[in-house]
Length: 377
Image (cartoon, one colour):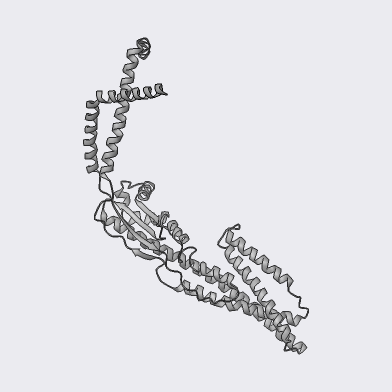
């Protein structure tokens, strides 16, 4: 143990001796590097940073009523505008990132501000894009807002590009929102029309049956049974519509879609447990009740979709617009100078120790040194 301590002390002592022996060489090198790194640090162009902060708009109160068939209603509330955009939540912000990182948005910025010339790649869009993405910042903050920032040598241009990115985000988000709302409206219109046709057929069947058999009323107890069973059948059809809607948005193994299928299975079990209606009149009457209940929630949902398609409001909320920065963001001159001097100090010490090691080898291993010397000739 004592021998190990003595060996360590001896090694450290030898190291200090070498450093002191070469102190003038080390100091001169560090001084030269200090001067050069200082000059470089002050010659480096000043880079300014400007950023804007945005949020998705608050989720609007839906006009959909609180019927017992709320499964599809909740889905439509969630997806009444572009998936993930137009309602508050982290998933919405990440959809913003997809838009902002798109090549279409990047190329619009590059062309508007002539960044190909500024970055020195007049004939290469790909190289310009690479430089652009190194200077742009899209960062989701802990509070849920999205920071959109840009680095540039010109402080005014940095602020202008950041604000232009916000405009592009709002423009593209609005386009996608309207497209999704139009798709929702067409989907619901088809369902409403289909249900209306089925209702008319059932009403005509009931009328023909009544005229043929002279039956115009049903017992009160039977009516209550029809009401309860028609509600379950309506739930089944509503869930089928929901699954049809979700299948257009998600992959076959999506968790939300699988959950809806499981709910449909549970409803089907209820349907199988319902007593059978042997009288054709009752079956026709129940079908009318089912179609009527379906229309009760499809129509307001269609109105919601039409409203979403026609409204003309910004999709995002701008919390802070980008301002022209007064102070540079980089380079950090102290860091540039300090890291240069420290890095060169390490290199200089390695050089000094290598020289001393070589001299020591030459002094104590003259034969081996001569063999190496002859081998190099």
